[in-house]
Length: 586
Image 1 (tube, rainbow, N blue to C red):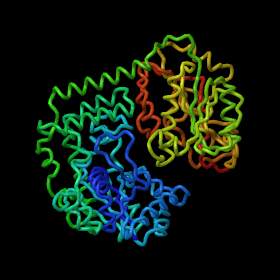
Image 2 (cartoon, rainbow, N blue to C red):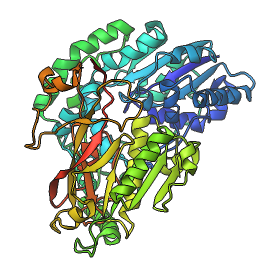
Image 3 (tube, rainbow, N blue to C red):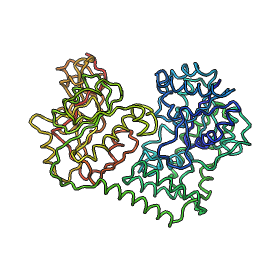
Image 4 (cartoon, rainbow, N blue to C red):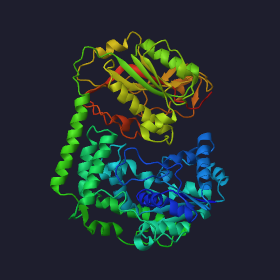
C-alpha cells in the first residue's frame, strides 16, 4: 500500500480536492483509493461555509513521528484502510504540511516506510505574484488572525520564506528523495480542472463520472479588501469573525455584480517577484522535471491576465449592510468588556502560564509569585498527568487547567501542531479568562522560566495603584540570567543578570555581544547571548481598548499589537527575571 502526501501549497485548489475526496470517499475506496476519516478535521469556525476536512492535525506526525501519539494516528489510518477490501493507495492532504512553521523531522520517512510500501510527496505551485495576492486575501479572512497590514507591509514583514519554493521543497527532497517528489504547476494544469489533474497525478483517471463539488474556498474580491481590513481592526472573537466571513462569501455566491479588479500589489513588487523568483522557478522545474511550466516560470503575464478579468463582488448597499453588522458585533463585545479606568483598586495582578517543568521548579514559580502578592495564578499543565496538577499550593487562588485532548478539542478543534501553538492558545485563553474577573486589575502571561521581579523596597500592588489612571499597559523589561556554569539544575538560581537598555548601568546596544571584560569577575566567556526582543506587557483588564480575542501569536509583538493601549509606561523598578538557556563556557 502506497502513500500520497499532498502538501499543498496554499491557494492551489487544495480545498476543492479535499471536498471532492470527502464527497466521493466511498467511490474512491471501491477503486482502491482511501481518503481517510482518521486524522481529518474541519475548522471549528471556518471562514467559509464550504470549508471541508483536510488532514492538518496530522502535521504533528511529520514533526514528531516517533512519539506515541503519532503512532496511534498512523495505526488508525491503517485500521481504516483494512476495513475496506482492496485499498492500494492512501491520500493524506493538507497545505499545512508544507507551511514554513511546520518543521518536518528527518525521521518521518523511516517511520512512514514501516506502514507504506511507497511514498510520493505531491505539491502544486502557483506563480508567486498571483499566489501572493490570493494568499494575502485568504489570511485577511482567517478567523484566528487579525491581519491589519496593507499588502506591501504584509509582503515585507511576512512573505519572505513563503515565496522561495525551492528552499521549501529542499527539506522534502532531503528526507524523501527527489525521485519520490512530484511537482505540478497549478497555473499550467490540464483542462484547468485541479481535481482531474490531481487524480491523474495520483495515477487514477476515472473520476470524470464522479460527483464534483461546487465552488470551494473562493477568493475575496480585491475591492472588499478594505472591508476585511476594517473588520480586523475591531474586537471580534473567532466565532464572530467566522460569522462575518461566511456572510460575505454567502452574499458573493448569490451576486451577479461584476467589477473591474482593483490593484493591491504595487508595480515595483510585481517586478521584484519576477526578478527574484523567475530564474529560481526555472531551475526548480528542471530539477523536478516539471514539463508544463510556462506560467510558473513567468513565461506569460498571468498576473495581468487575472487583473483584466472582471470579478464578482457586492454592490455598495450590500457592503454597507455587512459593515453595519460588523460594528454591531463590535459594540456588543465592547459593551461586555468596557468599564471605566477609574476603579477602587488597581493593584491586583493575575498571572497565566503554560508549563511542563520539574515539580521543584513549578512549586518555586507558584510560591514566589504568591509571596510577591499576585492575586490569582492560572496554570496550564502541558502534561495532563503532571504530579503538580494535584499539588496543594495552600491557596485557592491557584487554578489548574489540564491540557488534555478534550481541552484542545474545545479550544481549537484539534491537537496543536507544536509548542508555539500551545503557547498561543493558552496565552489567549488565560488573558481572556483573567480579563473578565472582577477581582483582577492587571494580567500578564509568563513563561515557566520567568519570575516577575520588583526592586527592593517596592511593593508591587502599591506601585500599580499609584500609576496614572490613563495608563492601561505596563512594560516589564526582561533581565536575562547569566549562569556561572552551564549545568545549573535550578533555573531560578542565577545571581547575575544582563541589564536592559533603560539608561541603567551596564546597558548594551541591541544585538551586541557582551565583552569579556564586563564579565571578568564571573570568569566567563560568552559564545552567544540571546535576549527577548520585546518586553512583556502587564495589561489593565477590561479597558475599552482591550481585544477579547487574540490572533495566531507569532511573537510578543503579534500578541500585544492588538491591545491598542491608551498609554504605555515602562516600569523601571520592575523586571522579568529570565533564564535564556544559552550555552556558556568557562
